[in-house]
Length: 576
Image (cartoon, rainbow, N blue to C red; front, side):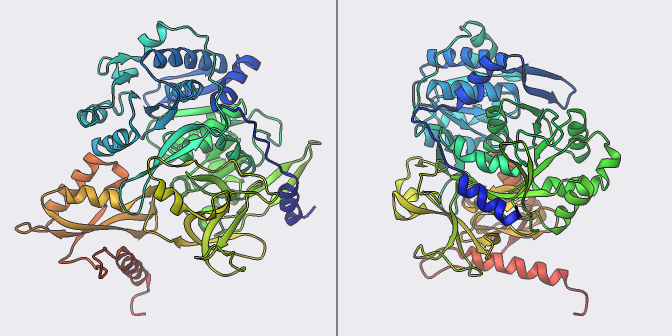
């Protein structure tokens, strides 16, 4: 079977089977607590040296206790519960507890400052937040502006700072709980995504999206949970569990298959990443291109430096992998990187697959990775490049990457989000065509070649990626203009060889302010203190005016092109 035949075979034979009743917590926790209660679910470490492990049985018992406690606090079906914690056992417990209650989990990054937390808590109408020591100060700072937030459950080092202590709550409750019988279409998770205009939008994700993610997850991880040598599969990723990449591309699919995931609570460092993967015999991982670049520079020969590495698959997403990183994976790691593409609203739809395993246990080559390409549609997803009218573009013609609501067999694709929280207009704008038979636009432009590989061209809006994080310029601009020195601001990506891009702000000053180094530092601190550290502008340029349209809108595209031209000029040899 050729690689093209393999891709066609998987698409042709794959069929979605989505039950009417389906719950993420049941398939990721409860069934394994019954089938393999002693199997390790999460092996955890902190950068202070503390470490431990919890089994599926223990994980489920704590989820049951927390579900009872949340119900006692008034959480009902459909209510939103904020989870503001890093990679730790309690984060996984909280997700399982909320889902089996029929409520909606709202993961929030511990990097968010008070403004970012306030907006999301208020917009979602969240009544309960579960938070640990990494975010309790910012959450409490945001709380006075969130009258709907009735209860703060404090975890770990935050104990005593909230309304209730997590450990004490669980100690009072039963470890038996009957999960709510949710429909596959019921909401499970609410994740806020950065927008081009206006504040972030809350993407409401149903339980069925768990299934919609799986074909891509399995393929991108070279047929997870299987390993070519029969060794136990172990997953680790530095991706934050508060984001789609960490939650839906790492934690939940690993638990779905009843396997072990490593949770590390600490800052990413290349050598620590290799040491962690070596010691825990990690077989599968998701590493952002930025992380891979840092690892490539720090450890040129990882198999010699860390001889116990057991990697069998590396998936990467968030930005282009690039030739150098791809070569590093293939030659130094011995594992070609499977690039993947998706977004919160329609995750894990395009990518690569190094190998796959048929039902008879035989291994087959997948479809070859092509450096620079996003890959091909994963089984169960109908992906195309479309024009402004929703027509499919011929090979080689750029257009908007889009995913159809129905797969190649005409069956509904379960990967789709339900819509944007409280924003029907934005939801309608995301789709082209009849609601039941439509294309969902990703906002990314690309070219599809004759073999179905997609080649990224850029965003069709002003959202961009910096060091793997998705940046919506509007939120940063809104924060900047709150400072008395700023009359107006525009945020764009500045090309950067290491991180793909960095955040740059063009600032128009208010009268009587001087644009000096001290003000740059002051504005950077202002943004870091209110939003997230990765959102603050690494560079600020003071200008007299911003380029505007005749209707008064800032032309970020003009500034973005200016930055790209400056980068090209800086890269040219002297005298050329």
